[in-house]
Image: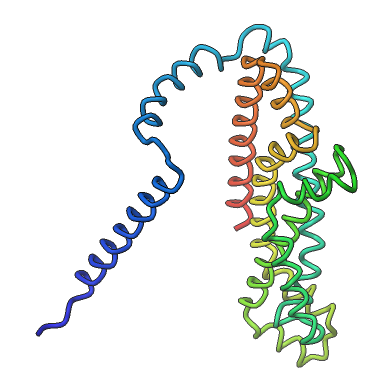
Length: 262
């Protein structure tokens, strides 16, 4: 009996995973009692309603300056939380990375802190912090800060551990101290990746800040929630449009910065 070649094996694996996915989907439909036919037939009605109601009008555009002011608050919150959390996360990552840790016992707590902060969703952080700060900008800021902090610690630990140890060993051989090794070898090698991750978190935080604003009553998310709940769908649609344009512009700007840095 001839052994299966690699292509036949991959094809069988793909078919197997596809069948498993279909079985899980079908099981979920049965458990939730989801009416597939009714859901599919509702799509045209939903599109018709959105085309007739969820469109900005003249009254919505008169609210544009107020919406842009809320957007500016959201963007500044996202940028400040991402940059400050990244600076703090880099310090913790230096203590947790194998190459730069001051003591082996510091590695596990640093990785554990990153795991806890990263795996709690930003909306869960917002709800937790509501008990401490109420519906205020501090709640949204710290929710974004904690998630960014956990993510940056994780990725920077991996980035630092992937840095070549040749320059580190060379500096140690010359008698350089810990801070000199960090500033002359580790930081220059990791800085492009750090900048790229910070830009990524700024983009992510702007999108997350919209959801956080709905929960905390701040920023552009609060404006959308206010207009939507008051059935002012034209203004709510303008908020969505402004958010989409802002995210696309910031993404284009961050991509240009990445190309210049990397």
